[in-house]
Length: 444
Image (cartoon, rainbow, N blue to C red; front, side, top):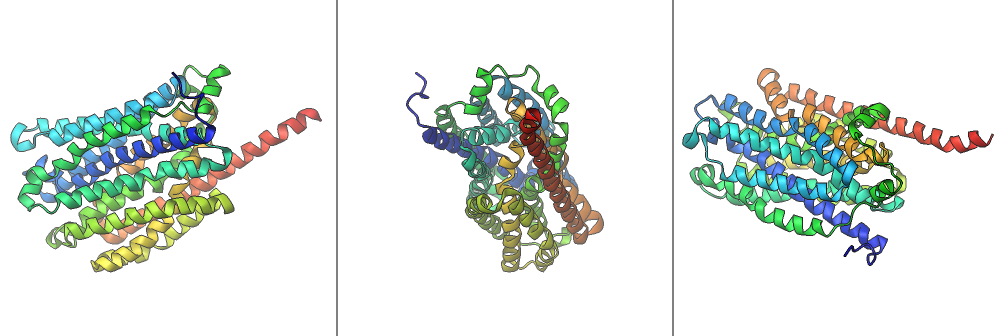
C-alpha cells in the first residue's frame, strides 16, 4: 500500500532528505576509500616492480577511470531517472557501488593473479564511476524536489553533507587499519574498509526503500511531460547550462581529491622521492579534522545563504579559497602539521561555503523533465575532465615544475569555478526575468 496518503509533506521531505544523505554518504565513503588506497597502497599491491613514481601515477590513473565512467553513468541513470522516476534509480546506484567496492576488497593482488589484478581493479573502478554518475544527481533531485521552495537550499546542502560524512567514515576506517604494522596493512588491512561497505549498503538500501518518489517528477508524469530521450532534449534546450554547470562544479569536485588523494600522497612520500616524509597517521588525522569542519560548516553556510543569497555565499567562499592558496602551499612546504591544519582549515571554510549550495544551485538550471540528465551530465562531465584527473595532473606538475606549479594549477581551478558560478547565475537570472515578463507582454 503506498504511503503517500499517510505522510505529510514535511514528513515526505524529511524522509527524502534523510534517504538522499545516507545513501550519498555511503557512496562517497566507497569512492573516498578508493582514493585513499590509491595514495597509500595500490601501487604496491597492483603495480609492483616499477619505479615508485611510476607506480603512483599508474595508481592515480586507475583512480581517474572512475571519473571517466561518470558521464556514462550520468547519461544511463539520468535517462532512467527522467523517464521512470528518481527512487528506483537511487536504489540501483547504491547497490552497484556497494557490489563493486566489496569486490575490490576481495580482489587478489598482482603477486597472486598477475596482470588480471590491475585489469579487474580498473573494471570495478569503472563500475564505481557509473554508480556515482547517477547517484549525486538523483540524490540532489530526490531531496530538493521534495522540499518546499524555501527549504530547497537546505535540502541540497544535506545532500552535500554526504561528501564530508563519507570522508569522515573513510578516513576513520583507514586510521584504524593504519594502526596495523606496515606489512599487515599492505597484505590485508587495507581490504577491511572495502569489505565494510557491504554492511553500509544494506543499511542504505533499507532506508532508501522507504523513500517516496519525487513530487515534481510525479507531477511531470501526471501532465504527460516526460520526454522519450532526455539527453537529446537537454542539449537541444539547455546545452549552455550543462557547460556552465561543468565550470561551476570544478572546485567542488577537484578539491576533495586534491586533498584526500594527492596531498595525502605528497606529504607522506619519503623526502628522497620528492615528498615530505610525514607520518601517514598524522595526515589522515588532519584530513579527518577537515572533514569534520566541513560537516559542521556546510549547514551553517546554507542558513547564511537563505538570508543573503546563494550566489553571494558561493562567490565569497570561492574568493577566500583563492586568496589562501599561497599561504596553503607555504604551510605544506614547512611540513608542520599544526600549520598545515590551520591554513587548510581556512581553505576548507571557503570551499565548503561554495560547495554547500552547489547541488541546489545547479538543479535550478534545468526543467523538471530533463533535470536528472542535465544535473548528472554537468557533474559527470566535470568529474571526467577535472575531478579524477586532479591527482594525476597535480603529481605530473609536481614532478616537472615543483610545488608552485601545483599552486598555479590550484589557482586555475578556483578561477574557472568562479567564472562558472557567475556565468550560470547570470544566465539563470536572465531566463527567470524573461519568464516573469512574458505574462505582462502577452497581456499588452
